[in-house]
Each structure stands twice: as structure tokens, then as C-alpha cells.
Amino acid sequence: MRRGAGFTRWAALVAIVLGMLAAGCSRQAPAVKFRSTDLTGVEWGKDFRLTDQNGKPRDLADFKGKVVLLFFGYTHCPDVCPTTLAKLASARKSLGAQADRVQVLFVTVDPARDTPQRLAEYLGGFDPTFLGLWGDETAIARTAKAFKIYYKAPHGEHDNRSLEAVEHSSGVFAFDPEGKLRLYIESGRSASDIAHDVKLLLSGGQ
Image 1 (cartoon, helix red, strand yellow):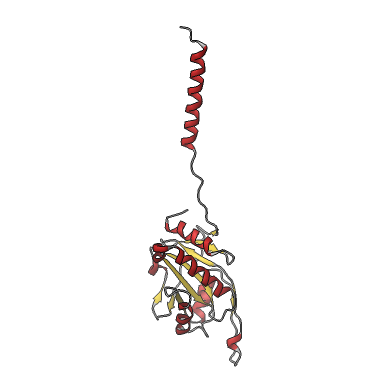
Image 2 (image 1 turned 90 degrees about the vertical axis):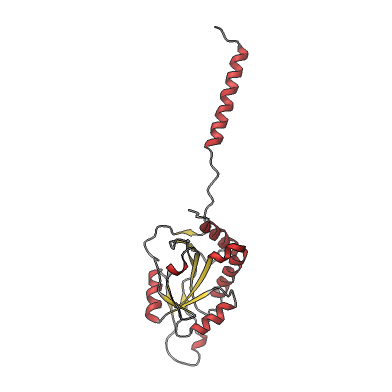
């Protein structure tokens, strides 16, 4: 049986349409990516054991089900610490109802001056849910080492010590709700970037 030119054109058109449909079905939406540095799978930064500003021993297990944002700093810091805490507060506020699933933890690298009371007063000025973590010099040094944090605290007792700066690494570590270290949020990231990445972690983003 001979098939005319009309049938041939029709068959070609069907083939083209089917090909387009198949391509459309196989095409996936582009993956949404983190804006911060992805640390998924690193073998360090597993946990911490410090005391919060209320005198309660704390570790990561206490915050399971929440995204934890861990930041090392000190209350006398003149620049990066208040700037970062303000951005974290803004990012958390922008999350609306999801904010209850985010916990910011501030680890002091200056335990001699940052008493629990001082931490509570300082952090309360940014967000009342923020928790300060404290320990003696040995505990702080151990925790900083576990997270590859550099810091150099002032030494000595004199009247001007309250004015001395502490050299320290900047940036925030983000843990997913399962307690796994996932991100390093650079100090230059905006509150919008932080909120974007936290939302991904809350939704199980990879």
C-alpha cells in the first residue's frame, strides 16, 4: 500500500511533537543552590559541649529539629560581631513562622570578660532567642580547634583590658535540623543570603 506525501508530512510532524514532549518530560528544574560555602561531609565540626548564659550545659543534640547558626566572637568586638549578629537577627525575622526552627548560638572567644550575664545582656539587644555559650579557656580553645577557628585573646590584668581587641575568625557555621554541619556563611553574606540558605536547610535542601 502506497502512502502519499500528506501522510509522510503528518508522520514527521507527529514525530517532532513526540520528541519535544519527551524532551520536556526529561528536563528538570534547575537545582536551587546554597549561596554560602557548602561543607557537607566534612570530618570536623561535629559537636560542642559548653554552658549557655543561663548555666545550662549544651551540645548540638539539644537543638535537633532546628537549623543551628553557630558564631564565634566576643561582646567587646567593635565591628564584625555586632554586624553579623544584626544580620542573623534580620534573617531570622524574615523567616516568619519558620523562625522558631532556627537557633543562633554565640560562642565567646573571650571568656575572661564575657560572663554569662554579660552575654545575656549583649545578645538580648539583637534577638531574645539568641543564646551565648561560655566555658573556661580550655573548653573554648577545644571548641575553637574543633571548628578550625583562630583567635587570640588579650592577656594580663590592667585597667585598659576592656578596650583590648580579640583577633578571631569571622563567619557562621550552619547545621541542618539533623545536626550535621552543612555550611560556612562568610561574613560578607547579606541577611537575604542567610535567609535563603536557612530556608533550603529547613526544607531538606542538598
